[in-house]
Image (cartoon, rainbow, N blue to C red; front, side):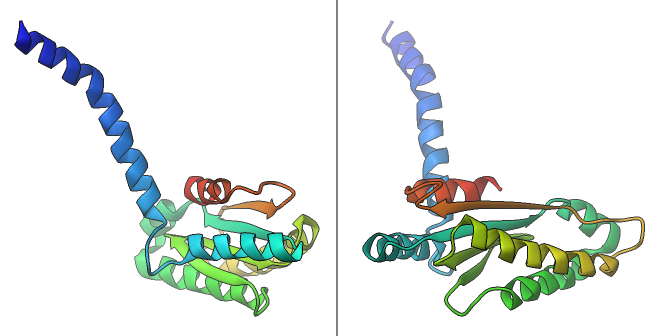
Length: 168
Protein backbone atom coordinates (compact mmCIF):
# COMPACT_ATOMS: atom_id res chain seq x y z
CA UNK A 1 0.00 0.00 0.00
CA UNK A 2 2.71 2.51 0.97
CA UNK A 3 4.58 1.66 -2.24
CA UNK A 4 1.46 2.55 -4.28
CA UNK A 5 1.16 5.88 -2.47
CA UNK A 6 4.82 6.66 -3.08
CA UNK A 7 4.45 5.83 -6.79
CA UNK A 8 1.34 7.99 -7.06
CA UNK A 9 3.08 10.92 -5.37
CA UNK A 10 6.11 10.59 -7.67
CA UNK A 11 3.91 10.37 -10.78
CA UNK A 12 2.14 13.61 -9.91
CA UNK A 13 5.22 15.51 -8.76
CA UNK A 14 7.57 14.46 -11.61
CA UNK A 15 6.08 16.89 -14.19
CA UNK A 16 6.28 19.75 -11.68
CA UNK A 17 9.93 19.02 -10.92
CA UNK A 18 10.71 18.71 -14.64
CA UNK A 19 9.13 22.12 -15.32
CA UNK A 20 11.12 23.67 -12.47
CA UNK A 21 14.34 22.31 -13.98
CA UNK A 22 13.43 23.67 -17.42
CA UNK A 23 12.64 27.09 -15.95
CA UNK A 24 15.92 27.21 -14.06
CA UNK A 25 17.83 26.26 -17.23
CA UNK A 26 16.09 29.05 -19.17
CA UNK A 27 16.87 31.52 -16.42
CA UNK A 28 20.53 30.47 -16.37
CA UNK A 29 20.76 30.87 -20.15
CA UNK A 30 21.15 34.64 -19.93
CA UNK A 31 23.16 34.75 -16.71
CA UNK A 32 26.35 33.97 -18.58
CA UNK A 33 29.13 36.22 -17.24
CA UNK A 34 30.59 36.45 -20.75
CA UNK A 35 27.34 37.92 -22.12
CA UNK A 36 26.22 40.85 -19.94
CA UNK A 37 22.96 41.45 -21.82
CA UNK A 38 20.68 41.08 -18.80
CA UNK A 39 22.89 43.43 -16.78
CA UNK A 40 22.85 45.95 -19.62
CA UNK A 41 19.05 45.85 -19.85
CA UNK A 42 18.73 46.36 -16.08
CA UNK A 43 21.16 49.27 -16.29
CA UNK A 44 19.19 50.84 -19.15
CA UNK A 45 15.93 50.48 -17.21
CA UNK A 46 17.48 52.28 -14.23
CA UNK A 47 18.88 55.08 -16.42
CA UNK A 48 15.62 55.42 -18.34
CA UNK A 49 13.60 55.72 -15.12
CA UNK A 50 15.91 58.32 -13.60
CA UNK A 51 16.41 60.41 -16.72
CA UNK A 52 13.01 59.82 -18.39
CA UNK A 53 14.64 58.30 -21.49
CA UNK A 54 13.65 55.63 -23.96
CA UNK A 55 15.64 52.64 -25.11
CA UNK A 56 14.92 49.75 -27.41
CA UNK A 57 16.15 46.18 -27.51
CA UNK A 58 16.20 44.61 -30.98
CA UNK A 59 17.00 41.07 -32.04
CA UNK A 60 18.32 40.17 -35.48
CA UNK A 61 18.09 36.46 -36.22
CA UNK A 62 19.02 34.57 -39.36
CA UNK A 63 16.12 32.15 -39.79
CA UNK A 64 17.56 29.52 -42.13
CA UNK A 65 20.90 28.83 -40.42
CA UNK A 66 20.72 25.03 -40.68
CA UNK A 67 19.98 25.21 -44.41
CA UNK A 68 22.83 27.67 -44.99
CA UNK A 69 25.29 25.43 -43.18
CA UNK A 70 24.03 22.36 -45.05
CA UNK A 71 24.28 24.04 -48.47
CA UNK A 72 27.39 26.17 -48.07
CA UNK A 73 29.28 24.85 -45.03
CA UNK A 74 29.93 26.17 -41.54
CA UNK A 75 32.91 28.28 -42.62
CA UNK A 76 30.93 30.28 -45.16
CA UNK A 77 28.09 30.73 -42.67
CA UNK A 78 30.57 31.98 -40.04
CA UNK A 79 31.98 34.52 -42.53
CA UNK A 80 28.45 35.63 -43.44
CA UNK A 81 27.45 36.01 -39.77
CA UNK A 82 30.60 38.07 -39.22
CA UNK A 83 29.70 40.40 -42.11
CA UNK A 84 26.24 40.84 -40.58
CA UNK A 85 27.84 41.59 -37.20
CA UNK A 86 29.99 44.25 -38.84
CA UNK A 87 26.95 45.66 -40.67
CA UNK A 88 24.99 46.00 -37.44
CA UNK A 89 27.87 47.56 -35.51
CA UNK A 90 28.46 50.04 -38.36
CA UNK A 91 24.89 51.35 -37.95
CA UNK A 92 24.71 51.79 -34.18
CA UNK A 93 26.23 54.56 -32.08
CA UNK A 94 28.95 54.38 -29.43
CA UNK A 95 26.31 54.56 -26.68
CA UNK A 96 24.47 51.52 -28.01
CA UNK A 97 25.24 47.95 -26.96
CA UNK A 98 25.72 44.95 -29.25
CA UNK A 99 26.20 41.26 -28.48
CA UNK A 100 25.78 37.85 -30.10
CA UNK A 101 23.17 35.76 -28.29
CA UNK A 102 23.21 32.59 -30.35
CA UNK A 103 24.10 31.10 -33.69
CA UNK A 104 23.11 33.75 -36.23
CA UNK A 105 21.32 35.75 -33.52
CA UNK A 106 22.36 39.24 -32.44
CA UNK A 107 20.95 41.65 -29.87
CA UNK A 108 21.31 45.41 -29.72
CA UNK A 109 20.30 47.85 -27.02
CA UNK A 110 19.67 51.24 -28.60
CA UNK A 111 20.22 53.81 -25.86
CA UNK A 112 17.87 56.80 -25.91
CA UNK A 113 15.98 55.61 -28.99
CA UNK A 114 12.21 55.13 -29.15
CA UNK A 115 10.38 52.87 -31.59
CA UNK A 116 10.42 55.40 -34.47
CA UNK A 117 14.15 56.05 -34.18
CA UNK A 118 14.77 52.33 -33.90
CA UNK A 119 12.79 51.67 -37.09
CA UNK A 120 15.10 54.05 -38.96
CA UNK A 121 18.19 52.20 -37.69
CA UNK A 122 16.61 48.83 -38.53
CA UNK A 123 15.75 49.96 -42.08
CA UNK A 124 19.36 51.03 -42.63
CA UNK A 125 20.63 47.70 -41.32
CA UNK A 126 18.11 45.73 -43.42
CA UNK A 127 19.09 47.60 -46.58
CA UNK A 128 22.72 46.72 -45.88
CA UNK A 129 21.70 43.08 -45.28
CA UNK A 130 20.17 43.10 -48.76
CA UNK A 131 23.53 44.05 -50.24
CA UNK A 132 25.12 41.05 -48.50
CA UNK A 133 22.73 38.51 -50.01
CA UNK A 134 24.96 38.05 -53.06
CA UNK A 135 27.26 36.28 -50.59
CA UNK A 136 25.41 33.06 -51.48
CA UNK A 137 24.24 31.60 -54.78
CA UNK A 138 21.51 33.28 -56.82
CA UNK A 139 19.06 30.50 -55.91
CA UNK A 140 19.40 31.00 -52.15
CA UNK A 141 18.06 33.94 -50.18
CA UNK A 142 18.71 34.26 -46.45
CA UNK A 143 15.70 35.06 -44.30
CA UNK A 144 15.74 37.16 -41.14
CA UNK A 145 13.57 37.79 -38.16
CA UNK A 146 13.80 41.15 -36.46
CA UNK A 147 12.01 41.82 -33.18
CA UNK A 148 12.02 44.96 -31.05
CA UNK A 149 10.65 46.11 -27.72
CA UNK A 150 10.85 49.71 -26.53
CA UNK A 151 10.97 50.99 -22.98
CA UNK A 152 8.60 52.35 -21.64
CA UNK A 153 6.08 52.23 -24.52
CA UNK A 154 6.07 48.45 -25.13
CA UNK A 155 7.14 47.21 -21.70
CA UNK A 156 8.78 48.21 -18.44
CA UNK A 157 9.52 44.60 -17.49
CA UNK A 158 13.05 43.21 -17.86
CA UNK A 159 11.62 39.71 -18.17
CA UNK A 160 9.68 40.61 -21.33
CA UNK A 161 12.91 41.79 -22.95
CA UNK A 162 14.62 38.53 -21.97
CA UNK A 163 11.68 36.42 -23.20
CA UNK A 164 11.78 38.17 -26.59
CA UNK A 165 15.49 37.44 -26.88
CA UNK A 166 15.03 33.82 -25.90
CA UNK A 167 12.06 33.18 -28.18
CA UNK A 168 13.49 34.82 -31.30
